Image 1: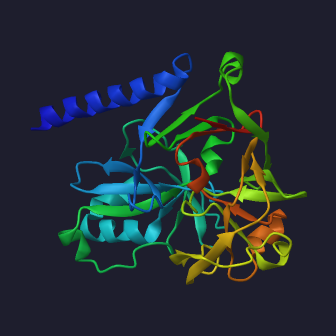
Image 2: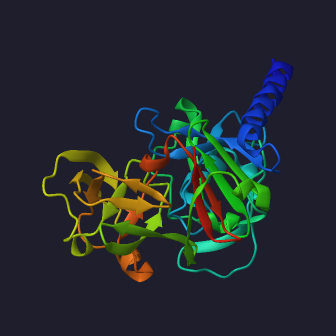
Length: 312
């Protein structure tokens, strides 16, 4: 059985690479598969890993809204309680803390393609909010977040149609000579800031693939000129990453044309944030762009050239 699983994994990886070669056949891109936490909603992008010989699946969320890559210390503690030898796989870099955050050498999680750097952050206050006996009942657990910090000198490729994540050191000049819709972006404190035009108004938005179900979500104070006249749509049980509060996001169609990365959208549904956002204020953005606009496309985020591209 083990031999069959190993062979199946190699076949799966070969298929993944053949898909990537259709668009990136002359590019040296490393591919990994991702799954949606809820396939019907296409909400959270998860990459699965294993650890040692444990019979569990450890899932990492890819989140371009997160400036850092980190492990959920609260969840990992559940496993070290059950398997104390795992404590030897957590080694701190130093004794310095930044709030509840500190650096560790990355434990030897196993992926289809290695994606984690040698050093990540750990926060013992995140995760683990479930009973200890869940480890006897379930096999899959969220263990951490992959943020944009590990890609900031690379190119990140999000192929939504084929559920693949790719990365490479660079893409060729010939690749960018294809038909591609592109836009420059700013990289502010490990956050991707894109220019967006709504009607005649030019604003900046943060690209957050963790906000998958949104087209655009905006704060009340900046949306007065293009806010929906009528709220006709609701996204239920949205988790606010800043406050931790859960709320229902209300939205409706704007009567302004919206231009993002060379593409124009009409009658776009825009969602309203429930209150203001310190993160948005600090980054001087009007809100966030989610994945909903790109689910039939491939997004390329070139951190070297600061270019955000969308291809069919």
